[in-house]
Structures are given as structure tokens and as C-alpha cells.
Length: 119
Image (tube, rainbow, N blue to C red):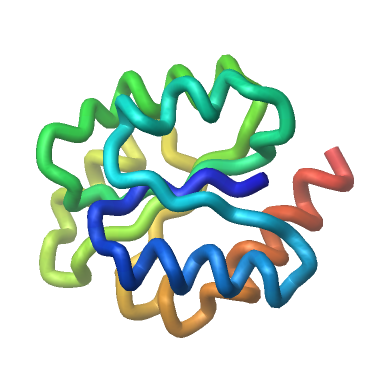
């Protein structure tokens, strides 16, 4: 399962639909606190997070996702390059501008799922 941590309902639905379209499953939650117990459950292979969520402790997210053995990708508003830089510093594997992430969503998820399968 792919865990999507987003506070925008429509983006959460798009991630869930894209995962379904490529033969996977995603569940969208609107806070990291809500994501934690799901991350610890079996079956979470990856996490998608919106870097623009208020109160997001990115270092904690990166560490907890790594401890769970899942992959992590993120997206950010294209006008906020500092969020991308913060993601790079924190160790986020891939950070996309929101527009590119949403445009390429099925391919982004499929690429990461395939990479995980080869590891």
C-alpha cells in the first residue's frame, strides 16, 4: 500500500485513483499523526507527502519512513524552492513540483514501485 499524507482531499483522491490504475492501493490521510499507525502496519511500501502541509516535521517523517523500510517521495508548490531544498537536506529520495507530480502521477508511482520490487 502507498500512504499519501496530504491535506488536500482532491489530491488524495487523485493519488488513490492513480495507484488503483496501476494495480496498487493507496490510502490518503490528512496528517502525519494519522499516518504513523498505518505506516507501522504491514503492507506499506511507500509514502507520498505534501511538503507544504503546515506543522510537518520533515526530519521525523524521513526517519520514521526509513525505519519502516518504505520509500518516500514528496511534492511541493513550484514557487517554494526552499521546500525542495529542505527535502533534499532531510534525505527525501525524490521531490517533485506539485504540477509535475500530478501530471506524471501514475508514472511516478509505478516507477517507484518497480524500483522497490528490484531492491
